Image (tube, rainbow, N blue to C red; front, top):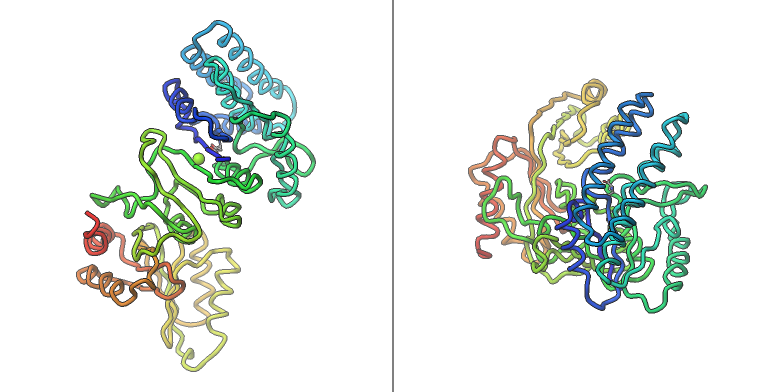
Length: 440
Ligand code: ASP
Ligand code: MG
């Protein structure tokens, strides 16, 4: 069994819905996980915010606009009167459900129920569309098997038992459709796996069914080996390990959140990123052990601040680093890159809200300096494959770029470099030329 998740942009309009239908029509057993149609969950969130603020007119207006959009989509999508009639009836009933909350007092229960309507509508529309085309498929509701416990963690045993029972009810069926994102909580109420949670749904289903592969279909070819916004001639990384993908995800490669594929990582189920608009491209495959290859990618993150604390007494002293880190802990600010010398420590942070308080408290321990507008550049790959050569190539590439910090050896998958943001594009391009030129 393969699990295929299609994101909101993949089912945004009739042409795209048809495209997805074409992509899934072979006899291989599969389960298709659908997000809400692009932009819907944002709108549903707006509705709940307006209800919270007692602005029912605004909530009513957005609801009407959204319903109109769905009715138009159905009119374009369905070819038979019967199909269209069914779809319009389904759409009305979901929007009436949303409206049924308008005269009640606000509760999180109602909020979660409203948020769930996007996936419920997109999956039903898709199922009706397949029926109209004569494709044999079965819609199973995620509300029958997807569940989180009291700590809001997926209840994996429950998911497995209930999903297997659900599928066993349809022997001989090769194609199942379900909703991403939505679930029930420990009290049996409608809930969700947080924004962007459909990838997580796919991964949890993959793990529960011990799937052969989980495919995440989006609108890009996969992870790129450098940032296409700043560097020309980037290429798609064909094969990554889960650890490498996790390193890259921090740097804003928004296509996949690493936590969302944790269930697959634990069961060693391959995850493949595919492009709905370029399905022949093999995409990026993420597995536990990809073939050894030195450098896979370069990525950058902006809006970093570096804080340097210099202690006159650090020489031969202990406890200094602990005190410094306690300050960051107190203000719940994660530290990303760290370098130390005998008498000083430099750390970077990307959450800047508490910087003033942090600086104030750190002054107890020494001289403190801060610099803003820094960028972290990360080189990801299996650096042990050819250690000497790689470090040389990185430093050689950066010989004209002022480097502020270097962190190497934290694990075998990355070298992290801090530069002033005005030097970022130059650094990314220089690294690309030195590290990937052999690939072009
Ligand atoms: N529809 C939800 C969202 O927009 C879940 C998802 O798309 O993954 O956040
Ligand atoms: Mg998404």
